[in-house]
Amino acid sequence: MRLRPELKAAETFAAEDTVELAVSDGSAETDHGLLFLLTKMRSDNPPQALLEDIITTVQDRFLGLEALALASLCERSELTAKLEKLPAIPGLVETPESKVSLARAWLRCWRNYGFWLSRMPSSRWKRPRIQGVSVKGKKGKGKFDAMDIVIKDKGARKLFNTTWTPELLSLFSTDMGGEYQLRGSDLSLLFEGSWMRCATCKSVHRPVPGVTHCLDCGSENVGTLDPEKDPVFLARKGYYRRPVMAALAVPPQEPMALIAAEHTAQLNAPQNEDIFSQAEKNELLFQDVAPAWGKEARRATAIDVLSSTTTMEVGIDIGALSGVALRNMPPGRANYQQRSGRAGRRGNAVATVIAFGSADSHDEHYFAEPDGMIRGGVVDPNSRSTIAKSRAVTSAPSCFRTTIRTGYPTLMPRSRTICSRCLAAYRAFVRKRPY
Ligand SMILES: [Zn+2]
Image (tube, rainbow, N blue to C red; front, side, top):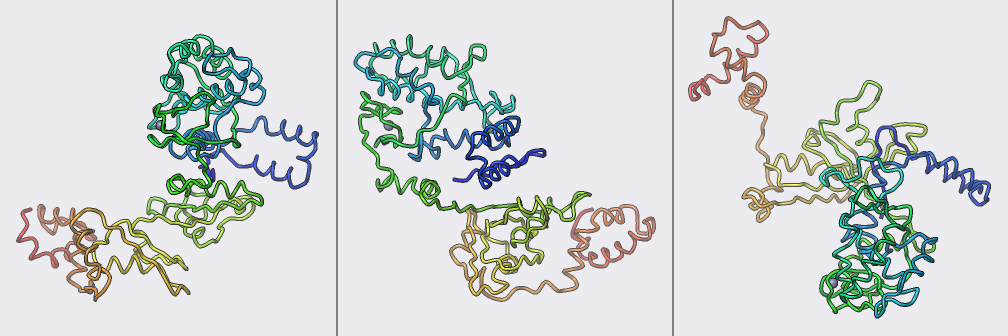
């Protein structure tokens, strides 16, 4: 898993450089150096997108840290002693460890609400989900329905709601006027420990002593999960879990990132102060050429995947391209050859071209009979009349219509030359079309 947030205008990764420097020159090893680092970093604002990514990485129901059996939300270490002193709930939790586990099961109930990080812009609070990650407030005195599944016994549930909930709310949340906001500063991540997996709803969670059922659906069909060995879990989640485990291993293995960027005509206009347009920059980065120097060059990341529109078809040569993936079947053989021909141009003996056939008759036909798309001659478009016709259609339909309406002699001289060509090419065409 790699957090690679998009940066807003004034945001930088300068803080990362500062820490990197402190680690490499050894000053991060000393108390004095750490204190200096703390005061230096305290006023820094992390990229907003990073803060949002942290929430989804931790709490996503399917691909979050808990769902992948990597880590779960727990309390900041200073709060553990307070959780251990919570009143016992007879028959459910009586030992200090089981109290802490139950409190963590309560923290788990917040996963649809997010948690507040101190540098978050205030607009992230309760914004519509369509606008991105948002932190929601818990109403109703902090009583979670999800907790009713964890604690099945009515008496124990009542005791939890009356004695535990107010205490937990004051430890972990901020009252925002009737709604509670979970404070990220009081949370931490627990990496070690065992895991449970429900065979009914497939949810993954930590064991809670005294609770023998699934925390999400209440099913008794739960068992201990060994995330390294369980074949079903590995088949479903192994792909996402493996790179994280490799990065955490000793010695760590660097995660492989695939960086994708866009290549469209909309990115073609360079700003006044730029040498290259964004599309040109992307083209260079795609070829592992850093187009800048100094600090910006160090931050420029090579692009692995260039997602392009048909601008790519007009003969842009981007060097040693080894593969082309077509989002749909091209309209004809000529287009196919243009698009797939971007790959395998320099020194690549093998180029891979994949075309995705969607559910329409054109795509289905060529999916069933790819020969018709891939092989055979191409109809030569180099006929004078075809070029003249298409030019007339694309460049002068309005003046063409004007000509018909007002008569040829009233037009300006420049339009006249276009229109004489239009008229020549379209004499036959006009007769068929009502103008
Ligand atoms: Zn379940």
